[in-house]
Image (cartoon, rainbow, N blue to C red; front, side, top):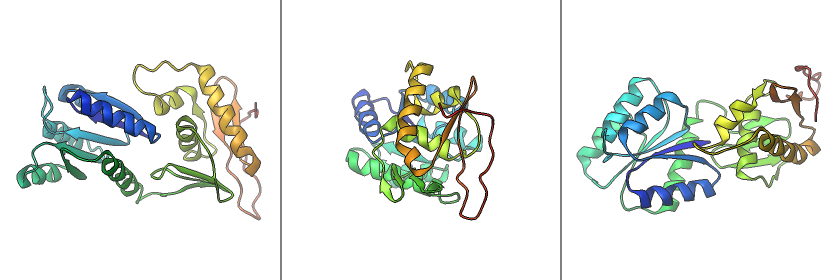
Length: 237
């Protein structure tokens, strides 16, 4: 999952980004409201952590424009002003949660997980393909009910593939989902991540196939009594 932090306090933004990256999220950081608005208009994020006191464009205006584009991204507001009026304004404009500074990083991480679960409530909260399951909010994957030891990149790769069973996912889509701004990731690196993930899930009969020159696809596992589903011409290499 990918998170955008809009926070002009460099020390706080650095602490937040480090904590969330350690929890397995891809994190991008902006320090002013105008850049936050442009980023949100141009790219998809899974959660927005938004400081109200941003320079350039106020956080409430960033939120107003975001909801004006009909974006449903969960928004967690941060502010030093713990007033009822500020809280009401943010929630009325479409914020999902609210934290007053200072706060504990562990609490913020818990609230991000809660927002993620809430956003998945209308969909399938646990993604499954046969014996393979992924809880995107809890960042836990299991195979045959046994937890898999996956790196943050492997978790992100699994998330995008298992949510699109049988569909082709290009390397460009994987880079966009897994990587932060300015991060140089080669196609060879993507191939390495796929290879590592493949080795960990193949014992459960889950195959990630390579469509030469196009990308990857996770084959849908048939339910008992059903025939195997077809897919694009591919190789398991």
